[in-house]
Image (cartoon, rainbow, N blue to C red):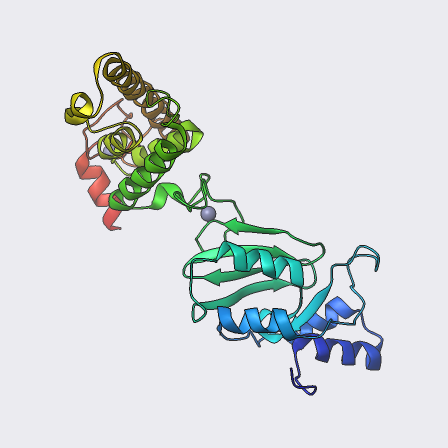
Length: 297
Ligand SMILES: [Zn+2]
Ligand SMILES: [Zn+2]
């Protein structure tokens, strides 16, 4: 790495020496208005393997606990080697030309780096801590499932379209089936993650397709159960599918009631909300007409 490379961290250290200011405050100043551009996975890999140790004093943790770091301008300053290796591992199936970009950096505490829509938080004050975040920029919450349901349950999953929810439900069901069906194909759990998908589907008037996608992917398509399974096992799988069908129904009704309660039991037009106003009417509206009017505003 060229000796004269002028990263935000180096500028901050310089300013700290000259002004006696706090390192983190200077780093923040040095970074302001100069968000670095994208870089490739190959560049990060090379830097991790060849860059010299960063020799500055970690401003957040004591020297004995501070992680070993190297300076990487595109991530806004020093980053721990071990954390970068962990990130590279998480991105392993992607190629060296894959692009990454720094979304934000909070001094020496943490940063968010984005790759192909996925967002990773790297902690900068310790070794080995990378965690995937909800895919919506700026969101600090964890995804329901990093691989199959990459949005947070609290806010952003319920904003996805019907098609996306069906896709996520299929991916989640397949993953669960892969993990659990070898032992007993009638005991594949859809878990809390499945419930989150159903709640989001209710908000999008997409309950039936999402319910069907979950059950078909985790167990079997209803018309195929007798083809894929035999005798006792076919009966067991069919029974598991039926009980899951009714359980998800109850989850959807609870989600429905929760949304209506949040709306104070009334539609925007003032009418009292019904249990079910129609298959394509979101729970917080009294009719398709009301949902349409409010939706177009
Ligand atoms: Zn989110
Ligand atoms: Zn209304």
